[in-house]
Length: 554
Image (cartoon, rainbow, N blue to C red; front, side, top):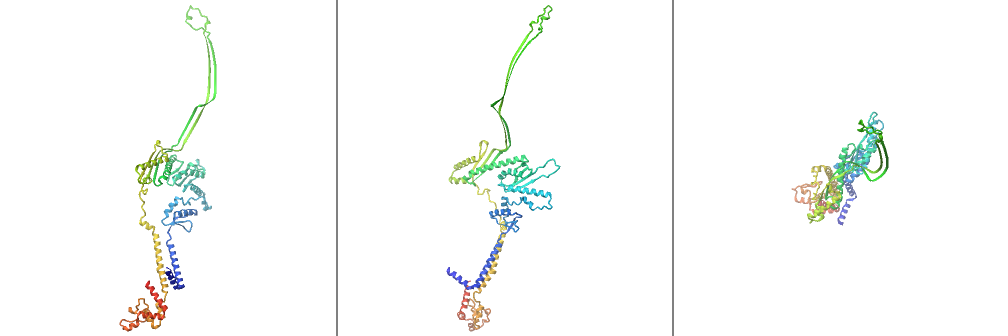
């Protein structure tokens, strides 16, 4: 290895400083051309993602795309965002999940770009409503779990001759999960009602992006139905989460699936009752009344008898008139008591579970992995029974309520869907990669052209100047030896005359009919020609021999 390195160094020194500088310049030029061509041709093609964005949105979108590994670029105007070709749909879905961009919710900065000249009252009112909607939407998006929000506020028009006053209304559409949206629906209604003058909370409707009604106060039927469905979903989700927390450390999150259906009664109930306690009585008042009555009655006339009608009967004296006397005594006592009474009025707007239906499937391979490959069906059934007990405890299962529970051990498929989604076709893949293929082909073509028309001619020119050419040696020889030296310039030892013509640049030629003696004089032996060349110039002869050796080696 040191000898080879020394030989390379010697060869480089033999070129001289001028030729080394030329070779270095050529190499630097070639490297620069290839680098510029590779950067320009391999630059990815970009597609427009969003136009008219604010600086804050561009910063947030850049962070999200950078974390996802999606290349992006910002146009020179500073408001247009570009992504690599073929990544537009993926980038928009990713940004939609994050609630970006938020530039559509313009707030009071709308008044910054509104001129006062020529602005009508109607335009001012519309701008004020838009600004109010944007500010409320921004505040709603700051709530945890709310990724995006859009607010519509309807303010009544003022009228001087209207008997009934119109009330404002509002509707809010949010993008969030079902649990987060239901949890924040009530708070959003209070927020909007407090932000708009004269707006009642019952006049605010909250929906999610899937069209599910989360909160409404106008239609009691729709409100109760939506509330019932929401409560059922919330109860089922909470029970599934409890089952998942109980079984995940034991089986693993991918080795079981739980499904819960809850029948919930959300009817409003109002109970009023009054309870009297006769044992806890208190005298309020006592009233006692006493009375003595005495009466005497005497009649002055005689009583009428039959004897009075007889003619011979003498009249009776009135001394025997009847008399009557009456005497009574009365005593009355009234006691008033204050009884202890309790009145209970119960209003219930909650819910009650009517029935639970729970189904849990467990990966049988996981159970055999825990028990061992030699596990029997009885051992697997025992583990399933243990899992069923855990599910009963975690879900609040009540057999007296009529709840149903089923736990089964089955073989899970490799893919839950049972099949793999078909990939993109060859034509689609080629169309997506066509830009890259064209860039790669253009890059290879540029490199080939640079090497073929740049490096190769320059290298040949530099290598050709390494030693004197045949014409230079010919011009340096005496006139009497020019013909012999011209014939010695061929590397195969044959002269141009032997091929039926003279050497280029030589005036000596012969025909095949020339005598043998003349032919010998014109074409001496190779040893003689080499000896003559050495006698004339040893240095030039060595250079010619070195050039021949290099040509034969190549």
